Image (cartoon, rainbow, N blue to C red; front, side, top):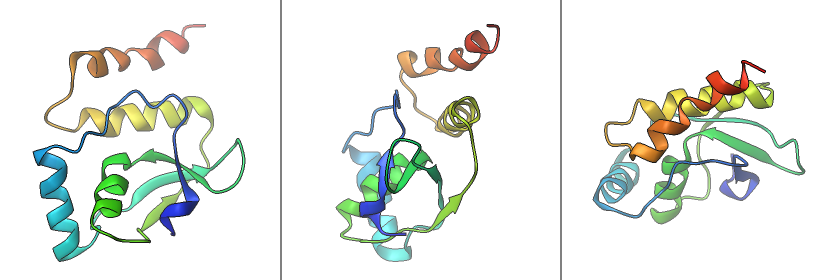
Length: 112
């Protein structure tokens, strides 16, 4: 899918920083391509698709000069999207404490 069709998930709390880890991901993408597809859904707010998981891969692919990346398109509502986004980001090794705190968000909102 063309990168220009991909938009960030509204309220995405996880930071994408151009640091050493992202540089290494960029180098890997330059050499091997994007090996793990991004998880996306139809953008409920307009055109294109919303990235649920894969913001770092998208940024590294842009930095590597790619114009397209592989994606998996899923039909997810807002709650399912938040859960998928949080779960995928918690699998990263280094997460900020504020990002870990956001993990509790789905549990809090599901108790409405």
